[in-house]
Every structure is written in structure tokens, then in C-alpha cells.
Image 1 (tube, one colour):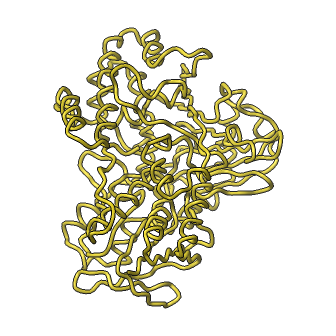
Image 2 (cartoon, rainbow, N blue to C red; image 1 turned 90 degrees about the vertical axis):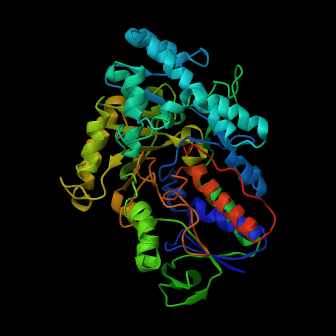
Image 3 (cartoon, one colour; image 1 turned 180 degrees about the vertical axis):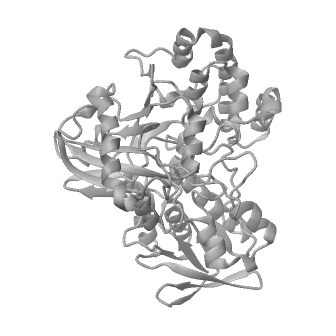
Length: 517
């Protein structure tokens, strides 16, 4: 059986590695000269940076990402580092306390500065604990787990269709406190009025803000852990590629798939940009939904309802603008020694999001992020030096300028704002690499680069993994998984298990992650 995998991001690599390990004939095609997509690691002048991956969930022991690495026998090749992030707002900060202050230290801190919402904080954290219990139970099998899940869900069932805005209004009166929990939606470029409310606790996991918070406490289910990957996420890319090659799979770079031939509603072959026709029994495609279904397949081969609901109507993030620096000092001393800090310069998150959706680049005035990967991975910079990434959300095609002409000017403006919080970045700068949305488009082969992929939405859903065409499967950040490092891997794992089950081979359908992160 001939398996064609399109795209060498984490989903494509994971799918190809799992299929190859299970004895299939696998060929993975990547249009770029290097594999990994935006999970690859960039190198320049002795410094290394990721394209954007930072602290991620579900790589800890017995968690979904860990299980996939174990199945592929590459756990010993990936070293993870427990981490945390800090958030800064215009007139207060969320900083990890020097001494551990308990699971609910943020709640207690917020009660001090927002006493009017003290009862609302108690309400929020009751919902928080239930949601995290549900997320854990949804990935367990057995009658007891199902009964527990129902018991946990019943008290909040009436809130299942709430938006993030409705959840925030239910819990808090202070708009600043609401912004604490919805600010991360700026990364998604998703309005609180459109984003599912019950996912807010998942993307605000307390152990993100203090790695000392235990994963299991009281009578609650075990929570997901959050980690950095030592050496950058390119380490996972390389390990997966080695599995593919070790089991006889092929990785073909600098070769794009231009057409997927369908006959009698079944995949038959693929055509490359070099004119080659390759027989395919199964195609596992990653990348853009519109690019796959409208360009490689053609909407005449798909149900109109599928195209309207899942392809043309797909809701994705926008892009990012990044400035990577190599510096000869330790900038983390200005951010509580944290490797990762989010800086929000406004509480009006919804206005910032709408501005980006309207293709207006904010030039950093609404916020930015500073990430120092060499803080947890010293080998990502020369000794005594650090690799630094400064980035912010940005539209693909801004109305107030263009990336080719304005990128240098906009880089300086972004660094002006960054140096108000972390002084000395340019004074100690040894090298620089600027990445615009245009660079991301070229790397990902997308007409519209969506940094976080598809976004959870109350009314719009991305394409399911199983497509209407027999033998065609869709994985990755714009598929039903929504995105994320481990999300990309679990989407591939899910699809491979579905293929096994359909063909009566080993493996059974696995319960898929209910809450994407």
C-alpha cells in the first residue's frame, strides 16, 4: 500500500513516522529545501531560534505527546524542560512568587488588586477545576471515567455554548481582570464574543505561570504539564525524520504536490511540480485547508456543504512579525529570569483583534512577546550569549504599509517598545534575523499564513480529519485538532489509528483530545 504524506511539519512527519514504523510504503513530500515547516529551528552566527514554538502542553510523562514519542521509540532523543511564563499589563504584573504560594496563588493575588471580583474569582476557579477534570477524563477509557466525566460536566452543561465574553461577564465586573484571562486570544486573533468560553480555563492553565504548581492536587484529575523542548523544536523534527528513514520511508524535499487525482470519489495518484505522477492508495495531507481542497483537489470533487462549512468558512489566525536577535548579555534579568514573557500594552483586547482582522498592523503598540530560548537551552547561543525572539501578531497584508518596504522600520519600532521593558537589546546585539508574514508564507506554502492554524469558534469548524474523498485524510493546524505542537502530533496519531482500524490492522480508534491547546 502506497502512502503519500504532504508537508513536513510535525503532523506530516508524525503521520509518516507512524505509518513507516507499521510497515507501510511511505513517501513524504516537502516543497521547501528543509523539513520541519514552522517547527524547524533557524541558525545564524552560532545562534539558534525557533520559528515561534514556545512553552507547550502534553509532552510530560504519560501525556499524549509523550505517548507518541514513546511509541516511536524516540523519548530518549527529546529532552523537555519544565517552564513558566510571565504576563505584564499596563499597570500591574503577574510574576511567579519567589517562594511557592500554592495552586491558587494567582487567584489570591487578583483578589488583592480586584477585591470587587473576589466572589467572581471563586466562581471562575470552580469552573476552572471542572474543565480541567473533564479534559483529563475525556482521554480516559472505562465506565468509571465516563461516569466521572458526566458528573463533572452536569453542573456546567448550561454554559457549554457560552462565548468567552459571556464567561467573563458571568465571573468578573472589572474589564482589566477580564483581560487577564482573554488576552491570550490576541494570539488567536479571535474575539471573545466568538471564542468558546469553556476553553478559556484550558489555555490559562495555572501551571503555565508557575511550574511548581502540582499536576494533581486534592480530589482532582491529573492536569497537563507545560514544557519547553531543550535545543528547540527542531529536535523533534530531526527525531521524527530519522524514524521515517530508519523504517524505509522516503523524504523528498524541494518537491511540491500540485494535484491529487480523484476518480470515483477515491484518491488515485498525485502529481508533483516536476511533472511526476505517483500512485497513491492513501494521501495524508497537512497545510492549508483552502490550498488542499480548492487547489489540489478542486471543489467539483467535494460536496458543496463541505466546501462552504469547513473550507471557505474556516476561521484561522493571522500571521506574526518576528525579530530574532543574538545578544552578548542575559536579558532575562529584566523579566524575573523568565525565558518567556508576554507584554500587553492595552486592556482592550477585542479592539486589538478587530484591528488586526481589518489588516491594520499595530506596530507593536498593543503588545509583544519576548522569548529567550537559550535561557533553558544554553547551546542555542555561544557561551555567555543569548538567543532572543521579539514578536507580535500581524496581518498577512497590512493596509498601512507593506512588509517588503517597512520591515526594517517596523523592526526598530518593535525593538523600541521591547527595550522599554528589557533594556540593552540593541546595545548588545551581535546578529539579527527578521521574519515577516511573507517569509512564513514561503515557508508554509500558504496563500494566507495562519500562525496558530484554525481557531476554536462557536459557529465555524475546520475540516474533519476524514474527508469526503476515500483515501484522503487531513491533519495539522488547520484540521479538526485546531493546532499546537502536540495537537499536530495527536492529529496524525489519530488518523493513523483510524486507517489501521478501517483496514482491520493493529490498533484501535483512540479517544481524541476534547480540548485543543
